[in-house]
Image (cartoon, rainbow, N blue to C red; front, side):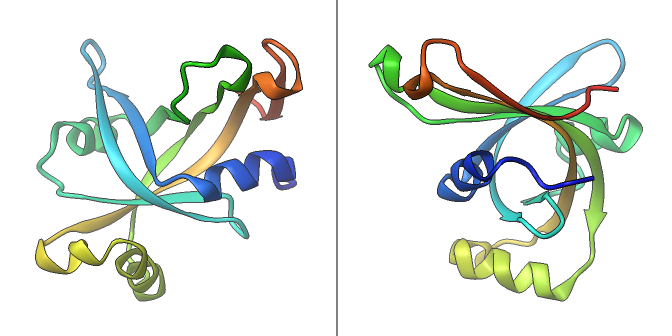
Length: 140
């Protein structure tokens, strides 16, 4: 599959906090996570403990959803992405080093890395016009 539109990639790279949505099948849950993005694989990486609710949910149901948003009170400047993907544990030492470089505080707490292989991204960018969307991938 091709990479997302460059505007989506720039937006994701510019930010560092995502909201991850999971479910255990009947109860939804959301968590905020610091992330890094690998453009070449279109993957988000974040750190979390395996005993957190969102990771326990995702290990049972690895299809997840989430958002990355900028904050503004000016409607014509609203931008953000909604995404879906598959969560897996990440074992790469290279990714671990990149994560620590971006978030040095990670050195002081034990953590595991997780990957979200993105399947679908919908970007809203009101700078292009109210409610304008850029869509990549498929929800199926």
